[in-house]
Image (cartoon, rainbow, N blue to C red; front, side, top):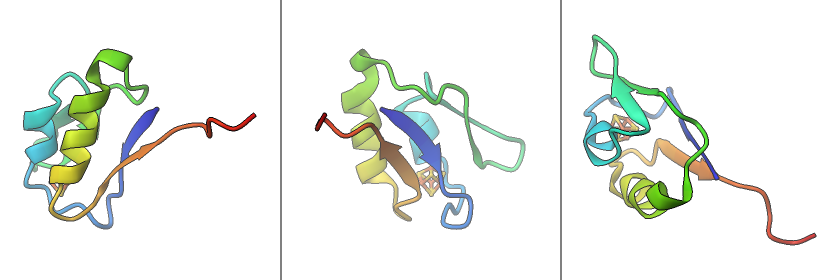
Length: 68
Ligand code: SF4
């Protein structure tokens, strides 16, 4: 699973960096910078929670389909 930010939608409140500081940092203007795109299994729940908490739906989680 990979995490990314849609910069056109993000308004920079920074909730995501508070919820998953292991994956996100804030730049000097308060906009998130993904420090680790691949989400380790132990952070998956926290990453999903951060994506749900994003008020602009700008935090995106995507992974390969489970179908083969
Ligand atoms: S929570 Fe959403 S809108 Fe806020 S900084 Fe993170 S990605 Fe941007």
